Image (cartoon, rainbow, N blue to C red):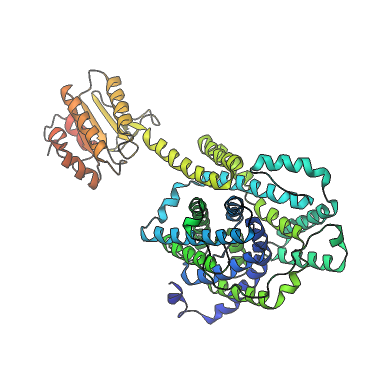
Length: 556
């Protein structure tokens, strides 16, 4: 529990900064969390509970000083769209499944911590996340735009929702639309002229005042209504995992997205302020935060970049700001909920639309296309998967795509042909540097990958082709394994077969720059009987010089 380390050494001079940051953060997450709760299909005040309880617990376990936690847009839509099917539309069962999903995420976090699986999320590339977030933003927007027009939404996927919206536009409530568009305009202008300030709270207060002092409610502007003026009560989820088929898949997807967002945002602020975060410890902090929300009428929470940015710009120095934020939210729930009665529901839709618009990074997608067409294609695959199959299936397909992309890269590796750089003792790829010196009868190769079971056959084929291209004059093959940090049993068998084939052709094979564990498995495989001693001290230059000078002491 990191708080036990930093709290005894807490400097009282930081108290004012953390207090101001906590109160500012509370004013920011209050309307945002309520908006995200409606996206998840639960009562708006559940979002406040998530920030209050999740943030309070998170503060005790996190190693980040500026990270704030709560509902996020992508996770809220995943919960809302999936639980709608699992609950059959029953509000009580809906809330119970949402709480159960938070409990499942907590358990996944604890299991991942125990088995040290924090690095597994690195299999999801930044390119996939870029496309996924853009697709998620559009999916979220299309669920909120009907509220902006004052019509009923519907549809099982993105394109069906668009089609239904187009059909219902003639029935739009233009008063609701105008109200929502003005709110959106104020939110975007606030971002531009007052960055880092709780603009959304100011717009929310303004909207409440306008509705309270006018008769706009008679024109079809629905309001939030009563919000319980109490703190969340303790109670275990009323359902068990065996009662809900499909909650595990939902929880895995929420865990992946939540943990990636949490660690990414935590590292961003750690780099900015010059300290370290423990990615594995954040599994615990996220796990306990979700455990808390599961038992206090909430749903899945994760670290969010927007609320963390507000926390940072407001002056947060330690996680104590999260505790102050929870205290401020508690005061609002106990004494000020009556002021939220006339909060227009279209205002919450506007807040969601404003928040998720930042997930579409057009400039970054253009930049990605310039840097790598393949990475751009992968990003577009993730983007399309979310639109076609929904956020839940989209994120799981994105994970599969990450693994497929990684395996593809490793299964068809590049084998570089090396030549000497001028008069030096260094060697590099002749494909990039054709001026490098190559010796008659000598072929120097460097596999640009680990040598494992699913790429060893391709490697053997490529090496054999290079040997064939060299012709009958070939006398020596030097294999540089400096890049091959790992060789498994299949890889070592392939190298043994290669040495046997070369020996039959009267060609010497020498292995240089092998890592310690690679040398160990090659020796156990018996390859040294064929190629001589595999030493970490022998370089390409040594082997070439010994061969060209006729020295026969290479084996030693």
